[in-house]
Amino acid sequence: MRSLDEFATAKLGELERSSLRRALVDTTRVTAIWLLRNGRRLLSFCCNDYLNLTHHPAVKEAAIEALRVHGVGAGASRFVTGNHPLFSELEARLARLKETEAACVFGSGYLANLGIIPALIGPDDLVLIDELAHACLWAGARLARAAVVPFRHADVEHVELLLAQLRRRHRHALIATDGVFSMDGDIAPLHGLAALAQRHDAWLMSDDAHGLGVVGGGRGSNFLGGTKADVPLQMGTLSKALGSYGGYVCASAAVVDLIRNRARTVIYSTGLPPAIVAAAIAALDVIEREPAYAALPLAKAKAFARGAGLPEPVSPIVPVLLGEAEAALKASRLLEDHGFLVVAIRPPTVPAGTARLRLTFTVIEAQ
Ligand SMILES: *Cc1c(COP(=O)(O)O)cnc(C)c1O
Image (cartoon, rainbow, N blue to C red; front, side, top):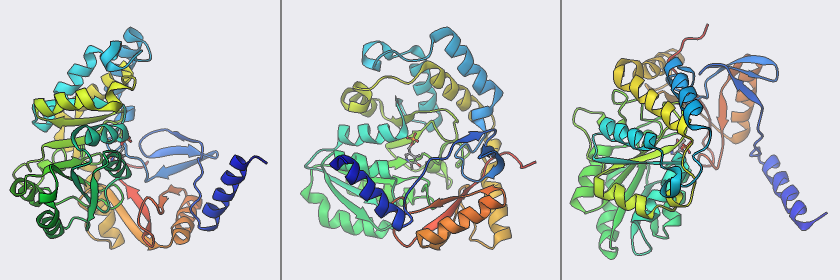
């Protein structure tokens, strides 16, 4: 056996023994909640397609029309010939929804964070990051080669302490957090963080992958709580509630222009397919036109939590903590035997000892 294969086999064995091995299972999604797996119809609580926009007639029609007219791929990086006019339209629409001057679209949410943070932050700088922030915020911060210091989850006082201790040693400072936390479903204290950022001249960045289309009347987590939180870097994805694919950042015109000029994941990667961009625009139409629609997944999550005796959720993501990875896997298998697909979330996606079932709720009713 080659040493490469020996290495892979040994590593897989380690993962298997600690219940951390992952396997892909062929699954056909029929709607946001029904899917087919191993010949069985399962009711899914694991899709991020909160508004069922992947199957919305107007969204599909927009994609089909763009595909017919413009073909499949973008053909090149946006800086070469891949900057289809649909990109400008999507960016203007995102900026309007988020009330910023400008926006920049990326190949995915993950690629957005890998591009944005190193475009703004360097080795002399400080990144304070929520300990439960999404893997791609961490990856972007590490890629920037800054001093990366985690703060206790959603703990504004801890951020204040760290800023008081560390801020003056660094040229620039970034505070990075999920808006809606992807594995816990809670919401960042954006107003408190914004006030601190202002006081200490730090730049606040929120990753609202699970906020857009879902909370704050569909406009995201910084629109919650009466007054809009001042978040100069609002990043998110087109791949979840929007039902399409891609990532974005909304910010001032100067910041977006700089990100476009420096983000390697924009410059050195092919633009999104035009049909995907057209679908995202059509999805924004639905969200802007029907803000009440965006409130439905959370209402369902609340009803479920009430029935199950769980704390009231603030987003359509409801975690049920079980502790060890094995317990979460067992619970997930048991539910699947009964026709419910509820994913077991294990380390390293969540901290050791906090393996859980994670349920997400969508607009459509099970029938
Ligand atoms: C899903 C997710 C991403 C990644 O977005 P993609 O478009 O799927 O690459 C980034 N951040 C958070 C918080 C997420 O939940």
